[in-house]
Image 1 (tube, helix red, strand yellow):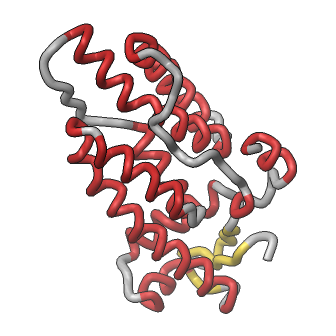
Image 2 (image 1 turned 45 degrees about the horizontal axis):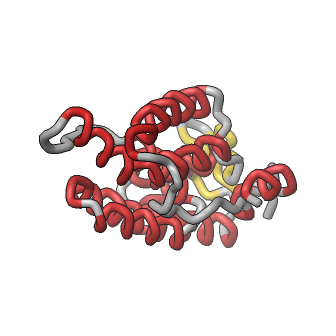
Length: 193
């Protein structure tokens, strides 16, 4: 259903649908590690190629593998599992937040909360809830006031320029916001609204 949704709504990212994250995979823990690293390479390629639908989709698949991957890692290498970076969470959660996919963030948080070695990543999901709220504020504001200058948007919403830039950059990548040069800044407007 997710790929069909993409093909049908290719230029309407807010209508994209993705499967909900779930740790219930039928993959054996020892196979999950290799598959996880394959997905990591796909995430890098989709990000580099700017295929954001497949990027998000693959991030969800990767997150689904985490519990079994960790179990397989521990069986093979012993000891604890300690990782500094999980691109599927770092990238995928941001895009899910910007696209207002709260149910997906909730499911990811549940997966992380259920695995001792991943509990420290719950804060990352919590941060993305605030990103989701800011994304909603930005889109609502731009729908009501198209042509708003990027350098005044943050002030209008009471947030930093950096937070505004982060959201606007992601919305632009998803073809939801269009920037038009206006002096030293950009005029912003929602696309397809």
